[in-house]
Amino acid sequence: MPYTAIIQLTVAGTNTGPFDLYSDADNYFSPFETGISRASILAGYVSVLVPNNTTVIKVQSLGECNNYININVDGLLPTPVP
Image 1 (tube, rainbow, N blue to C red):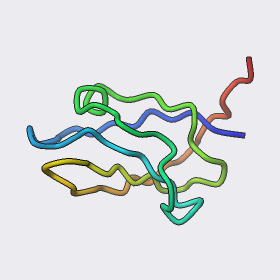
Image 2 (cartoon, helix red, strand yellow):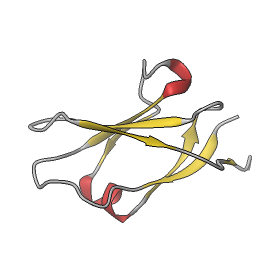
Image 3 (tube, one colour):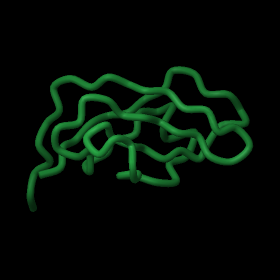
Image 4 (cartoon, rainbow, N blue to C red):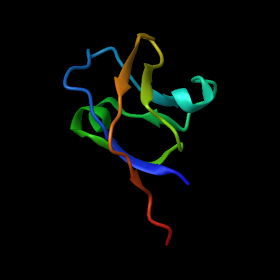
């Protein structure tokens, strides 16, 4: 069952993004979200696809800047099933 999380960066350079999101649950092997805009990450992107057992989310910038940051997560909420 996926979980819901708000992923937000407080600072992101003008040459960052779009962003892909990875989880430590699969050792950051494949992104669970892709192509998230810089504006969305700065505003607080709501993901409903965070994999079960995630404790760290890697926010990877693509394109000109390819840096990343790891964010520890705590208190994930199960994503409601429609």
